[in-house]
Length: 294
Image (tube, rainbow, N blue to C red; front, top):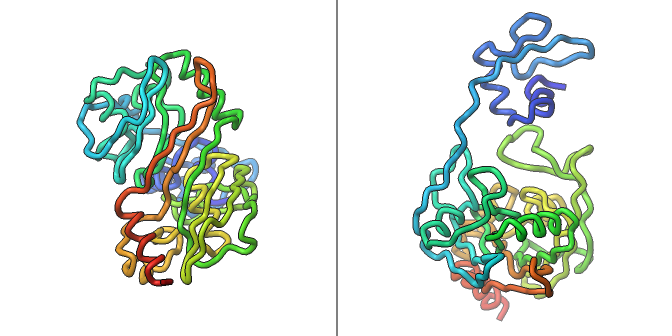
């Protein structure tokens, strides 16, 4: 195993972070400086000098354009997340966040969890829109965290994927982990984390298909990775192999992927369901596909 891959797994760091440590001479193998691509062997003595711990990220209360509150009570707040908004602060992200937008709107959320993601029980990519829930009470945080872990939450996404999945209804069961060469991507890899995606074609067009997706697991980029792996990437998802010509034709600048609905047992009792309509750019692309088939 390469030094960057091995130490990434051992230390929980990104491969790029390990590569930076190696370049600065902070990774030693048997007392000798090691490069990121050097190979590790059994029995080798590893010494790694880590940089000082970063200060905890802080939530900054900044209004977020397009962030809509769909429901709010003493336990939860359900929002419709717009494009280009991360759920919480993270290293390298300087854009708007859901938790910052809620703070600016005067919504008090639970204090459980790390400082930058207090109250957060699940996430959506910055480039993915749709419905998500944030806990307001500590009781809700505990209940919802457990529900997501035990997979009792029904998460439904709609995606427009290139081509026509065969069969039109099925399950993609393939393990996912960091991409072996590109640190910012994920991939189906042997030995990765178990990942299961169920899908059903809702509408078929000449160049693409609208599919309803139910996640059994919730890995980072799971839907995007799984459909790319079966050669049907999300339309507009250039990171995972989508056709740029089709994306330009549909005037879409990100993956066609939307968190359509979220159903779960409310922390105070009773089954609840919340839904989100397609944002304008996704609806436009869908209308274009329908028009081209007309």
